[in-house]
Amino acid sequence: MKIAGHNWKWSKQLGRRSGLPPFIVVHHQAGTGSTAGIHASHLSRGWRGIGYHYHVRLDGSIHRGRPEWAYGAHAPGANDSIGICFEGNYETQRDMPAAQLAAGRELMADLQRRYPKAKVRGHGDFVPTACPGRYFPLNELLKGGSVALPLVDPGKRALLKQRMLWYALRNDLSLKDVAGMLRSFAYASGASALALPEEGRTLAESRLRAWESAARAAFLDAYRQTVANSRSHLVPESDEAFARALRAWELDKALYEVAYEARNRPTWLAIPLAALTPA
Image 1 (tube, rainbow, N blue to C red):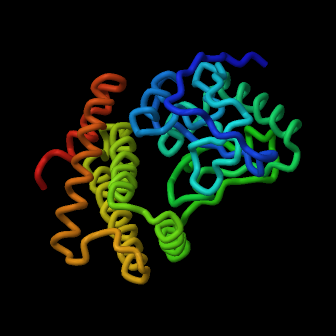
Image 2 (cartoon, rainbow, N blue to C red):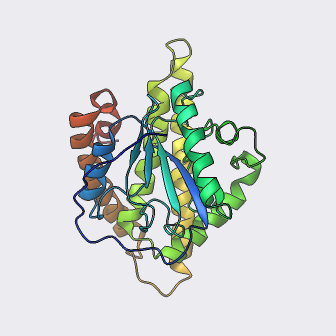
């Protein structure tokens, strides 16, 4: 197995994990782009650099991110684990290219051989996110193993809301973080819309907007309940002040996204631009 190394420049010294990794956490990139692009993006967020330990690209090449001995920055509550990011958006992309699947299998088999007690989990097992996507082929990567990623169906919305409450309380989630989550909902909807065929597009886009609106409402409701029941004064208490502050952070995030997409993924530029258009 060939793994491409990179001479990354870290903003700070990396922390060393004290023991063996308890999990191997899989992610999708929710798009396409180079490993260097991920490193630059994570640096721009104030991180030490790329948060994943490995990046598996669509062409089957495997790139090293952080060294395995280092703490990651990819899943709150599980950063003492090995993080693997797969290029692509498996929330909308139904099939993983054969080269990427073969490389992922080889990497997963090697990690499981060296860390036999590490459990394989998805990003969404630790935080309320769609990552690594509904179509992520984990069972295929594990060669037909019994581990599968949980899917959130309508009957589990109460559980998802409970997890949102837990995550907000556990992490003292600030409004900046909340804005980031809301932008993730917008990207899930926007990326899905870009992949729609022309036939039936209008109806499908309407349904995607309805899903995004419902996801926003559920997350904000859970967040504000958490804040109200805690002793942390994280956000303005009045509805008007809360909405103004949240809107400011969403605009801040969207402006960063505009610059990023213009440089790296211009076909997705419409997604952040939509956030800058008055409703």
